[in-house]
Length: 445
Image (cartoon, rainbow, N blue to C red; front, side, top):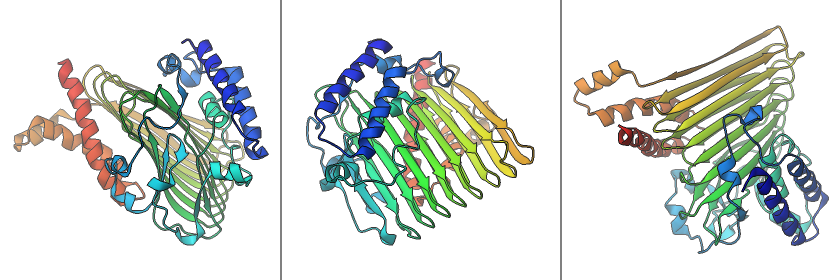
């Protein structure tokens, strides 16, 4: 299908989807109507748009994805165990093809009054989430986010009450399972952290089976005054799947937010992350690690908006690419005219294997205030030959020497994760992805 045909395909599927909906509350119906109208006007993005110039979504557009239904076979606990990390011992909430699966979840009582609720249950009961739901992400410039809102059936609503501390990590596992036809899933997460609350959240995307598919995810985070949220977005789907994520956050006075985006699979991956520092004293950290081989494309776009004075942001993304993989990093830091005393840093470092891997990097500072401390930079390079020679001279073979150096390059991001057990477990997964990148280089030689 062309992009125009894809637009008509999704609009037709949405009309059928709406026909099957029961009457629903305004908090869902109104954003849904705005979102499908925005998608109808814009359609899927194309490389002529500046924000999409490096990412051609034609491979996504040409497949007539259907809304994911029930899996072709039941997903059991054994399927989850094959993906399990040590943090699975904490509270685990599982969604299969976008729908909450209580039978697969470990819903232990959360400390501090924290709650994880199903959006589908709220819709059915007529209950409502906090007023900020579906307002942080703007569907007009984000057509994939518009589709997510338009087709939203279920998702996770995380409520952190005033002064509460969730203690252990809250682990959301979104499982994509095969259906009769190539399907798209729309994971949705909304986090509302009230004043003084604390939580660590892990949003984990995995796949069961080898069927082609598309994951289109939206996460909204609202941190109240003096709240602290540590958030990990982990994408470890197979290389034949497409994945688009949109993360949007708003921070109030003296809140703390850290977001760690880890992309370790997927044919085409696009991650958008936008943070609005809306009140004084807010601090945010954006970390990212993307590893690709073969013909993968991994695109990261970030925006940090300093809207008020006395805020701080730190951003650090690292890419490791081999074979014919391509990486993209475009990071914008905007300091508005009244945002004096801003402190902002931004770095992007990339490691390439072989002559065919490439990365496009564009860190940006847009500063409209004069009393600020801001810096940015990027690097692109290969492994240090002297370091490799040193290791080989100590009896370490070529493959092990490369693994050692590249793991060291990525370990800075893993060591900063808020759940140490997750960082340790991901180290092995990172090594497997690195070997995949190395193998892609070796087969080309």
